[in-house]
Length: 351
Image (cartoon, rainbow, N blue to C red):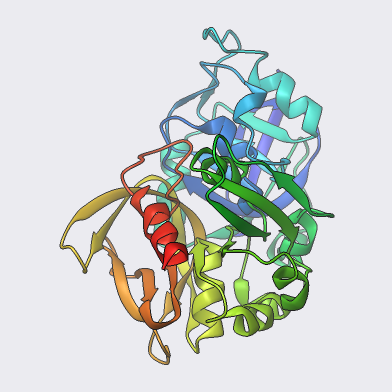
């Protein structure tokens, strides 16, 4: 393996070995705590523009299986402690090194991921460069920004996923960078799913006469996609809506709330939340850098709260038949404890 480097914007350098494609890039460095699910992580459009660091020390041991892909890979780099080059699983199609070469993403292994994680936790999310030669000028790293991420990852044309078995509802998914398992989960529960680009207007969305609308997950700062917030405002109250991750943030922004960037985000399958409606606690899968602040929220009531940092994890809009959740109820990979949110969404459409 060739020598490679992870260079942080504060000047710290970590030397490791390159795997995957030898394509140096700058990105926003984040860490994710997932023990499994690296295939879903690498193919989740919500990671657009980011360099992902896995806290779990061994990655790649069960290989890559394309059936589990969530979308097109949009990450700028991948950092692990140890990469497995001889995966063992009956579903394995090829190894992680082969996948990263196919999608043009550079990986770095053999670095102290625990130390880097502590740096991010102490100083917050920062930019970094994954490379084979040390840069002379760090300003290019510090000046990097993830821009127009939703426009980059949204689908370019609408598509249909038919219901499995008897059709119960017609549901439209607005694709801000949607994980494919959202549509698959809806179809498995009897929905005919229409997936539309984030650039569609409210009128174009309503032309499909949906029984309900799902606002999907997506990357970066939702405030930068003002067009989408305006469309949600026009849709609010007309059709039952479920917002997932960025979709939850879009619903909140459309109702007067704001968003703030978290120090190092919530990434992984072990985020604890409290349901204020039932008093129950759940372990959830999340991937986002921004959280909703509710001081100026109209129409809604905060329902879910993160038990680690007390940030808003979900809002009910009972009078308007809408619900937003910061976490993923379809959770591939991860806990399925919050799948009941789909059932609540179905109840809103039935009513």
